[in-house]
Image 1: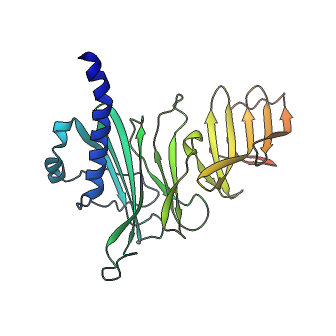
Image 2: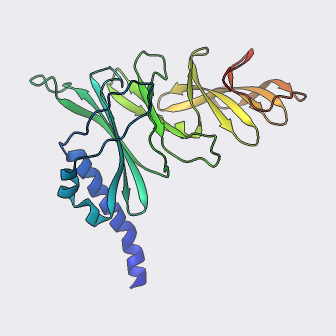
Image 3: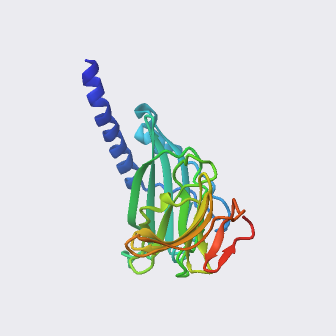
Length: 264
């Protein structure tokens, strides 16, 4: 009997996850929208109790942990909406990201929100979303990141990045963004840079290519200060190395010439 229960539990969890995802996708209830400025941290809002009662969520050992909605700042401002939902199924946490545009497929009702695409995945993050809505690719449309994982070192803030595609009017999930903590848009080089803290620290410079980030340069501070570039195949070329450097902790906004951020 014990073996039977061990086999059935993963299947039950999957069924509950699937049912819960469909429930959230189908509901017509709308979460109260967040009207904060894009530089402010996200706030959570409670999903209406009627949804919980209708779904009998508590009887399935499932609960909604956090929600976030923005329809003022993301993408084409006022015409796009993003909705994040974090929930628990048994002991596992999941996130759903839903993206809408207003009236794209509804000429008769231009104010109707039409869903364009959505994502869902498992997360180990116990932190709040702490969303950041800003332009990460310099196309004048705002994108979104949120805390999506927990790193081994607390200095590394792991985020998932979604870029707004104005041509397709969809959000594009940047698949490897969680590999590059502490991401910033770098206006000096028109790229994204990330700051990785390990035994030393590294600043990496990245371009968005399709649904991925590709590293093209790195400044590493460890036993020496090393500056490297990378071709499209990922092959490294060391262009500068200083074994006598006394620098131990710095974030750089340029690698040629070396230039540090003032606040790091």
